[in-house]
Image (cartoon, rainbow, N blue to C red):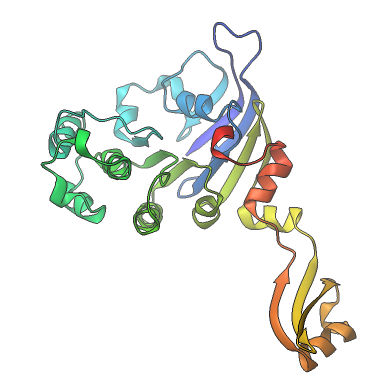
Length: 287
């Protein structure tokens, strides 16, 4: 869908490039995560590939055509949901939606979308009276209004309760299953793990890792198995190397003879990988 080659970008008042020659591709029909600490270049990269920033070096192709060759028809094919919801607060939800509908040639079924995110009953309510979570859900509706082929989502579930977060994640999966492609940034690593086919880590304007969450967890994890079991009324634990685990007699004896409480592999988490790759502890202030 997108192919980015040796992308560089520098803001006018900066001495150094913010984006330092990064290359990656977003495959059609995948959910691609883009992760990194604050100031790493995530937002700048996204602004470039949605044609908000244009004075870049390098090459970007969208569907095998140079991005610079596209006119405003490009926006018919993409949907964007920014982290900070931007709506007309003195207009109702439906007035907001109807305003944006007029900008596009293709329109999605608004009632269906609004019902899905739980906002249909509040469609005539002023957006200024909406909670942050309601504004975020309205943001996704707006991003899907034009039946896009490509979605750009920035912190799509931030500020949502678990139920509404799951609804949005289900909608993102359905969009992908119907042939859509998604570029997503988020500091909620569980969302990235659940949704993304591949993720890239950007640090100081350079991409340090690109792979599937599964492969990254295997690569950065420990190849061990930790067994917790009961013995003489106490909970004990023992760690075994994963290699030849089926032939490890001590492991076999514990599994056969002891009351097992838990068995864990040494698989790490995306949060741990984030810290290792970026050197930055994961929290809201660093993203």
